[in-house]
Length: 380
Image (tube, rainbow, N blue to C red; front, side, top):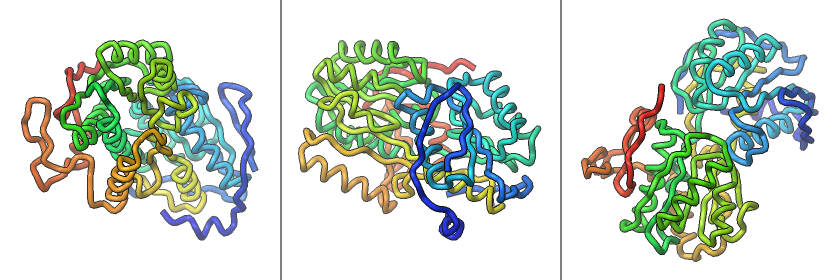
């Protein structure tokens, strides 16, 4: 999305950040499309932008990454925007109430940042056709609702490659939040990368049944270590797993943001999300009356996901291998699910010369080979 013309009128600057309450406002100075419906925004007033978060902004994980994106948007657009966020919003009725209130409060663009916010977002959007909504990780769209997510499978694959090279026990532990396609896809992409560098290694999965609970995440990490895992990774939001690995003397990967602060020796790298450019672009689109309902699914090449700097304990030749594969992802010459891909039972799901397409990835409910355990049924 080209924002250069508009940015000629915007001065870039840093922004300060203060937490004063659960709900805050501040005046800091690929895709299938559906026709836009909402009315033009008056550009001589700050664009009010709302964010709904599943966890606390201080989780150093998923929510923290989104809030970094919000703050980057503020720094980019300064007094052109006024943002509000609500943290710790449960999926379901609470989300619907909060999203509706943000709309009633005059926010013209609302980002809802958890999979379980999908139906509440669609419902509230029908009530407010002149407000734009962007839902993260979902698949339902409307004339005033777009969806977005990063191609997490790319950095997941890269961390899997590293894990395959760094494990001595050939047992790698993965702590999942909930068994939804997004998480299953990440586990499988990780296993694909692991098997690329070490076909003998196995991934053991434990489900924390939470997005953010440091105590439960640590408990799962301990259980996996007891099963022989000497490398851990996660699809949960706190730094507890990396912290545990540091204490245990094993390795770990962070997720969502650079989690090296939780374990300088244990932390190998993190699969990170980078939302700032996307949030800025969407705000600019509303301001210039060019917003469209789109399915945005961007990867390393578009700057939405990546890995953080690698720990120098990783051998130089391994780092070179990782960087070469990363370049292939950027160039589009490789994909985490390039065929042949087999499932746990040895059935070929993706033939040689084919790639698991986006529709299949978004509905993924099976593990690739190299993963032990079954996928629990998600409660409706």
